[in-house]
Length: 137
Image (cartoon, rainbow, N blue to C red; front, side, top):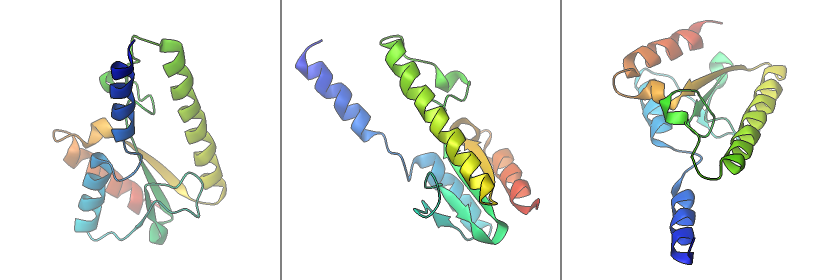
């Protein structure tokens, strides 16, 4: 592999955001339109959750299917450097598990919403499910 190929890969990885992603913004907009008020990326909580609804004691994490290994077609492992990617993705899963346990021990209800469920064809169903989970206390 030459330097220009590596540079392109690095640039692509740097463009991947960890917060304020399109699916996250789409979910936040829908919740706000329905009257829910929330905090985002609270540094006081383990893992800096995407959406924190203190009134409902609820945390919503919007997970990208690839990075959090959802199991849908969007979460396939790259063909090159598979051992590297398996290691990176496994570390992400372990971190998610630890943070979720910490949050639950602090008394929070945690909901994971997957990127693929927020696609246009599934969006209304996903929002209805999220709203039911928020209100179910």
